[in-house]
Image (tube, rainbow, N blue to C red; front, top):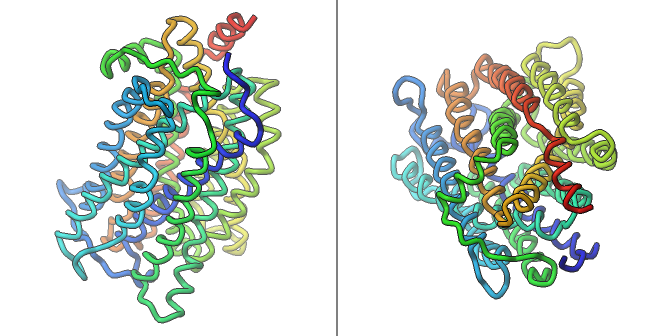
Length: 452
């Protein structure tokens, strides 16, 4: 067994998560808001706001294409990473090559070559979004596969996943402050769209620096069992899906991401339309959400070791259902709008903490179990296939949410916004049912037996 990763290196690793969470948070929080602007936003329409086939919007179609291409590249990048014989290691070499273009295209997806509404803007967005997702995958998939290799036991992997959950929320919380920064530029005399791009550029530079921290501080050869796989992509994917527990868990995870992405993409609309609050409030809410989740990280870590990960994930699904149903009534309750918002954040913080930590550990455990049974280490393809499935869920969510938000073609319709929360709740119920079919005991007994 390779050397145990010291705490300083664990922190370095987790800072990479901070970086990609910050960059992905910018696109996740603001892309829909930017391209389906409300009447209150002051953002000029740049993509034709029309529908195809009666329900699919142009922006929804573009985002669906981006997510589909992103999903397809996940197993491809994962396989290349598993098979890599780079001197720097199977994972770090990919992270190094992708960091700069990942940061650059995070900003370019918000840049429009033509002023005003134009089909050329739609074409440009399609190209930049596809490249954004490609380079994000090149960083994130090897990064997550690295967790399974530098964490040599289930508890080490759980601790690492806890650390990167902290930095994931830090990145997400920092990205939520973009409205505050772009308002600074607006007060300096810049237009709304230019101010947003300037704010995103500042955050992209910070994100890039964080992406590079693990690249230049972790010696993969020293801490990882980096034995290249000889399996080709299709063979590796087939072998992965022959693992019944992985198959069940990853479909449940797909449904979770479908629900979460719908809710996350609509959150700014909840604030500005349902609660009639300024855009800046989203940043405060996400900071409270991050801090609230952070409070539960240590209890989640402890309870997962005591009761198992499956029970906590099931509880989290139930809490998400409660939160989303509550969210559908925002603005209608007989309490101040600000209080309604903070109640939503409080309800959501616990399941966010659970899902922020445990799914990566479950996948790492399954990958370790598979390696013990087959003698082939394919951590990359397990994480790559998991992200492939999660992005299929996110892709489908873009179709659903863009259709709901454009029922009145300006993103301001109340019924469509409320329906996003209803849809998210229904999908969480489906995810819970699938999760209950996962046999956690089988996986953990197989790993424990090998360690003994």
